Length: 266
Image 1: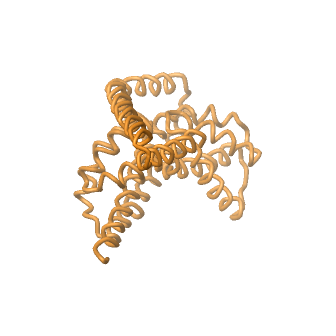
Image 2 (image 1 turned 180 degrees about the vertical axis):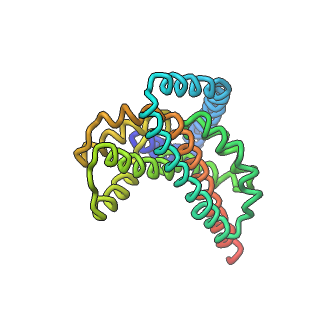
Image 3 (image 1 turned 60 degrees about the horizontal axis):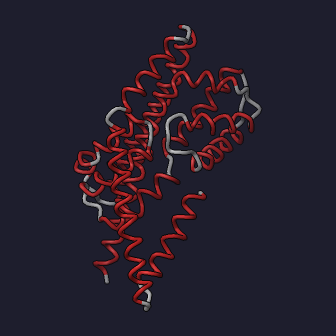
């Protein structure tokens, strides 16, 4: 949030400088814009290089974790992972596809053009690292540069569909493991708190475990569950991150569609 606030302040100040009546101030504003555009391109290219090798590291972490767990633990975690991915299927089929259909966005074309984004997010488990590829994919899907450049960086910070789903599934799994009983009010509270806390979760691998620890404390559940879920965190993070990225792009597509409709009606 601090980084986002600073970026907004710097952006407003640069915009003021670029449109200033003082020629010297205007020149400095354009210098700053050129500098940040060059720096942006530099770091995006660095991230692309990192992404070439990140899947190897993610696979090694997952293999090491599974190798140290017992069979009973593996079975329970496998069921937990299956339920989580079932939730993701329902999210993609009924929510994501439903939104695309509602706003008359070509479904097959959208998923085809954004395939590189969500597959990269799946194998890296990082929505921040996937951001440059997600932006390129969104533009291929026909979303305007203006909407992409604003919506996707914002969505990478605030939007976490997969993270919210992961939080709810993890809490229910923890309750089953410890024998705790939740009322309907408790379950609704879990959904609300999980959604709110997922917004502040960093878009990097394993960041969800930190948020999960905070939620477990709120419901008086043992923190040992975090170490248990860590055994499948790589698999859970993959699906959740892919959903986060797709949700960001769908949000941008809806905004772009609305903007075009408003512009045509004028």
